[in-house]
Figure 1: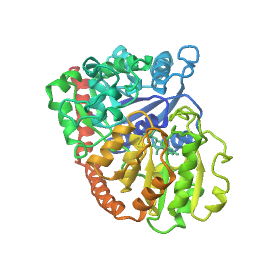
Figure 2 (figure 1 turned 60 degrees about the vertical axis):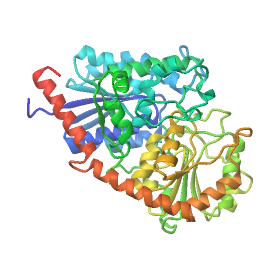
Figure 3 (figure 1 turned 180 degrees about the horizontal axis):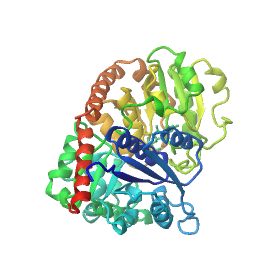
Figure 4 (figure 1 turned 30 degrees about the vertical axis):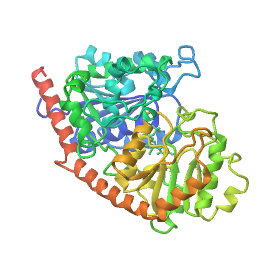
Length: 480
Ligand code: UDP
């Protein structure tokens, strides 16, 4: 057994924010820990950009990717259901296809790792008698709130957002009511109950892997491991830090070399603000116009990944992963012409990791998806934190108040729009101002921390190394 290569099956639910970290962790396990990895990617749409990334990663001998089309849930989940509910239903309905795919593999996996939405597939690991892990693609603070939410449900009276005091999570920094993760703000929606159910189910796993590192979140990690209340909530399961998984950016992962990189090559060092709202973020038509004007008024260079407005849903493009046409008719008249020498507008999807690693980039206006945050930190790029949905408001609070590597706009409570003057001021300040300089210094220190965490004998490296030995022990001796 000592020489037998461990085979890890990794299950990713739909959405770039789930698939990409699973692929990158899989790549890390295969290249740095010599494991055989099979990624089972449940996909809801055929995305060209993700297919390209998958192709680039599968050139590695020990990593293979199998795409499993998500079950059609149109008759099961209401069409206007929250993304979280749709994902849960999709993953549940796809279990038979996942089971069939795993049983058709040429060698039986020794362990199953899945993201939070893959938790129902733990039943497959149980059928096979193999250990199962949940890979949380968010951070430890979010993990604490998520796993504690069934308890909060009993403690909080009325709506979360109406609470007068911050919500206490044992041992962790409290969360301001207005920053709580979706779907907590709407506890009368069906999604809320499904979410609480998932919060209990993740603790059925043999352990939690979190896309963070020890020095970034010592307080929340300590609470998850030693605070009696939180430990009992996570059923005393071990918590491993494995992040940031995007770190050690490897040239063979670069697949989307295109016009935007060539444009960045021609810009001065640290002069460009990169603007993107993740794989699914969208805004109202009015907000898009204000943002366009704000960028123009700032007189700074920019790369903007822009999508058409989609009503009032901030996650309106979640299931389309960058599929949209490039008629920018929703931008202010003449915007593209006036800004053609200072700005580069990309429809829907851009090679983000490569952009953030480019020396011309000075700042990132981001929706604060955790992958985007990590990509910015590991590239040493300070941010403007503009959260839209999911746990992004918590991430924004962490970046601005605790780590002090980002500034956050004020949204008018009546208009619900960030105006152009504020946007222009923040962009100027981030790229040229003193505040931006101070943030750059702080983010560089964090960047060094990520280097340490994932280097050989760093905390995240050792977490995986020791976990790997532990799993080998189970396989060899048949006990935990
Ligand atoms: N991404 C990208 N190009 C884009 C938009 C997103 O490569 O134009 C990648 C980004 O680098 C990140 C992931 O998609 O790895 C999005 O994950 P995140 O957690 O930031 O946000 P989500 O899309 O899940 O809200």
